[in-house]
Length: 463
Image 1 (cartoon, rainbow, N blue to C red):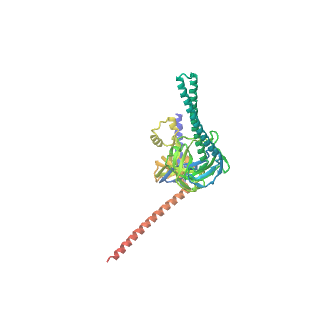
Image 2: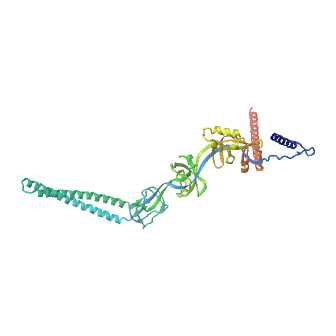
């Protein structure tokens, strides 16, 4: 009973305060009791626009030639002639350098002499084998007459087999010597190094007089020079794992060189790595992506640093608003109808009650009748400044875009007012629209008047 009386007293006091707030003095027409009014939040607004919006994925990269060859030597020797310099254009098959071939020529001569020696040895081995066969045949005749012993017969057979084996050995040695001579002749040809492709000498790593060596399993060989085919260039970049699902082969891209950040170079995506890598010292996984440069601009050089922009999504007729207008609110901070609408759209998601209560919802506030009104929005693609809205906003709505402090305090029904800058911009826009309308009206009137004059002139010319 005491609680009931307390509530009644509080109600009477509140009613009295409200009544006093409505009463006014007869002389000044001001309230007898000043009651604090709600202070309006100062906001800036804009109207949604219809136009084109493109989502871009940005990444750093480096320029390189699609075809680049490191020229090395396949034999160990000294460079005795190098008629090219760094920056020279060479065609496929052109002479790049000549190595000292005196040692190899001596080895070739030795190999040829060895083959001649083996051929003579084969002739001798054939004669020995023939003689051993004749001796054995004679012993067979004597054995039939009992004019020789079995021991002598076996000795002659052994001599024949030995002569035949020597003959076969000499033949195999001749084959081996021929293979060695062939290899020596091939090495001799390798002392003259020619361009494997047409291109530009991008780098000279060796000089005339230096000894070049071949590579082994543990030690790399000497790289004499690098040739780059500058007719086809590419950019090797690394795309963050968050953006890589949107990057596809064939997508349009732009390359901005560090030497000229204002002039983009056309490109397209060639390949996206199927496996990501993590750079040393970083926790971000990136995927190597190759872009083909669709330009023969001479400014593009191998080794240049560049930034790339890849167009992963594009809408030509989209309703867009500034990205700062989209805010996130927890479910408990929003009206029930907004939450119900959001849950209907999320019906296919199997979430626990705890996860559902912790969800943040994307909303936009508009200014209507000097109050804030929340709208549930369905966002699409976004760039650095604007975001696409697929649902929830009309073109004529006054979307609240700031300032940030006001956006953070906005709630449904909150009183809002335009800032002075916003009022000025709105007035300028209205004046500009009125001027354009007046100009169009004047133009139409002039066109109508001109038409009437032309018709009158035509009538006067008729006899």
